[in-house]
Image 1 (cartoon, chains in turn cyan, yellow):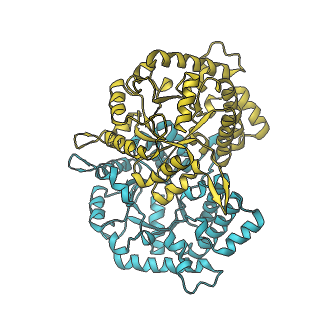
Image 2: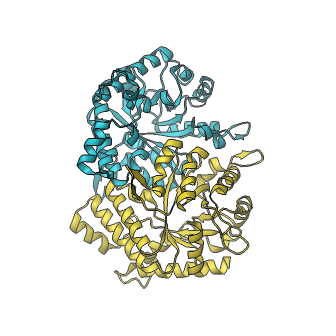
Image 3: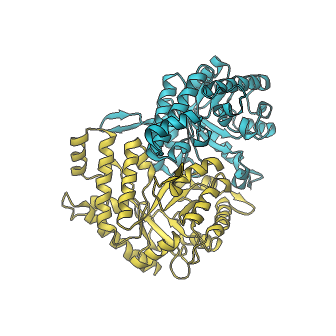
Length: 304
Length: 304
């Protein structure tokens, strides 16, 4: 998985992952109206809207980016109909050659983690295998320590899948726990050390592990520190664009070749049409394409 | 929610919550065979099995316990069909007068937490309200700090719902992060302080907050420490029975009246028939009833 991801980033000269995190409020009117006309004001209508919206964006950006990252919460809030849209989005993205990182941030103790690992392992039912969730990689929460992570690491190794474990998040209160000082350094440095160690169990062939880290785009110095603590850990970096980060902030997160990271932008890409003076009231995904091109250029300039 | 929970615990003289965490391997043969005959070796068959299994147990224990706690991972691993069984289990449990704690352990930054909060808040679609997940309370992960918790706390206050936030888990590697020492005390004490503080925003009328804590049953001393750090925080305590804890270990977790906790047992109750020499090959849930009665007695003796 990590080798394939690195390959796709190089092929497209673009370490951008598109966060497919739709919300009702950001959808174009014609998509909302059509679905409500057909399905009423129901969760089913929302599921259909999200699917149509995501597919249009995937059509416009799949040749430019290596991967998409749907945030499952946006779908889960609408129950089974929302999750149907999550799955249909993943299916379509993979059909278009994209890798899929499921942003699920699960985390639980061993036997339960084993069950959650079905996201990337699939399930066996009396000898028959079902890959029901289809993600290539998922995000995880480390609060319970290694026995909640181990079932996933095993799947990474055995089925060439990936995980990205939360290390430092860039939300305002991320510091409350993560920055507590322990043995002279913040908790998230400790977590970085654990993630780096765990990653040794599932190395790819390009110097990076299938066990990656989520590290928010806060500042270049912090990135450089984390890069040093996790030399063979691929970084999934949220916070670009709408959340305030720029390519400049990402210096330090990369390795000596300007690689080793994939940068997420969600709203900045998928809702780009809302700020696009050329938007014609219909072809909203064209604005997403322009946003991806602009982001690729910014990243190439800063990380190049 | 917390007042209702306390009321139900008193009414039934039993602080037991039944963990409805079925796995294929623990199901009675006749349930497996019937579902596979009808639906094949499919996720749909598993969903039907889980539903039949859970309903039989709910029928036998609903008069004895205040609440059930389905672990969503066990269902989620089977995709949409599994989640259908999760929802049908919740619907049935509530119909039988039980409170439902969804063990979902979600945790994410603000806007995403807002979406996950639909588990207890429901969703609005153009003015129509849908309570799609139906839980009375859910479990949460604190790694991202308060902005990932706040949307839930708001719902707790406005809709009288509840959350239980992970503080100390009793799995072997729980200590890796939670026991790191910061300012002379372990990280989980710090988290306990945060949870206690956050809880002040959503107090019930019985001295306890709608914001509770998950604290593993490890030892009585640790329980007493945590009780002191979180005097108005209700504890959800997993680890009883199959995971090794006994009623004796729970001394210290309670308040001066022997209250303030709800104790989960999963496998020890739902798979009790496997160790019951009276099992007749059919009425497996009778063994669950006996297990609940034995647990009630053990808890009454130790905590009473």
